Length: 519
Image 1 (cartoon, rainbow, N blue to C red):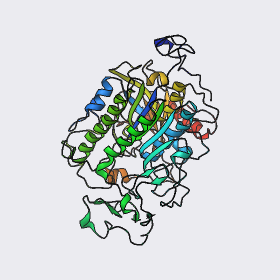
Image 2: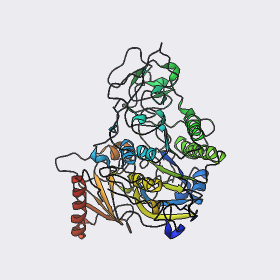
Image 3: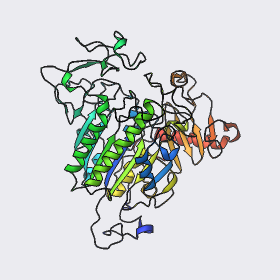
Image 4: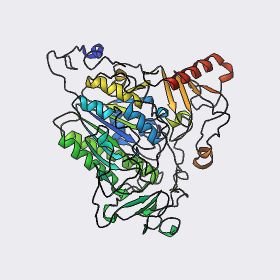
């Protein structure tokens, strides 16, 4: 797939650019590549920010970004769960091609080190690349010794620097990993992680010592207790390296500041992957009790403040003007996801997915339709709302265009260049777009088709039973007209058989594609 860069050409409608011309139309001046920051929040719903109708909490920093940038109404995470979304965003490839699902905490690196990635591509364009925060894309080759160099990982797939929560906040190991090594690890107290059985003298577990837990947890999240929270998996040793959940905002924002400061004299790409607002939700004292929704509302406000800390660092470095900032989420919202923290009881009349049905895991719009704001003072006119439809996996081709990189055949095969929509010079996004969950769905403008679950397979029902989320999956064909039914309540498949046939044919064609561009 070859992409013709509009970094120098296709913005001419607004800036009259040509090759060798700056975006401001100043001839014979070398173009300065903008820095790029992607804030990837965890489990934040479309309605969970102020500009999209948040109730019971406030997000002034995010609202200000929207006021100074573009607020998108129809942008989607690639998948309704975290690991597949991250895989698709970083590779420009649909997660189903890798059969990517939520990874266990001891999984090997999901992304092949020979595969071209978003940070790889930007490095080719002269960018410094860094990732800070939740990883959850696997590490090592499947049998990690946490007391030695842990690799392959982010540094082997294009990042120059990484500071990670190795898996998720609700999984062991509950330690930070900087580049290849666990931070503050005492070699005389070796760290051992096991997801099947206790590795010797483990920490207390929620199963055996429920009285030590700060939040009740389900069976899956009821193993090793760290910082008063039972996690998934068993862990022993590494006591000096253990994190404190309440410190995540300051620690991660601090590492982001260090990365930006080090690379302030060259273009950089920072992937800031939040732990908030994923479970366990443990706001620090500055934000505890600040919302009207309990800890879920508190961590929404804490997340907003963390964005503000990074943006303040950017401003102090004099880099805000020429930095493209993307604020978005890895999938739709979930309230009850393993811990009883009263998120359901204290929700009141707030609607985390806004007017849409479903949430995390779901095939309905709430599963992947997420908040997204683009902010770039130098080139984006603020205060705009855009209905352009596209997916996070389109960051790859769009950033390649922005950086003047030509994408090679077989690279980022599902990513589409939507740079003009991303920076507001056009309202045109994708015409068609795949939405992934435990099945595949297809958008064709306002039409939404959900592929039926095969007759010989069980429909996942844990969403409806355990999460309070409409899964939206069926063994029947489903078609919805979102223009007058955004909540997907009325199946109109029987009225539009030709549309159903066409959309299923597109999904089938996508499944057959392996080395060329898709939709």
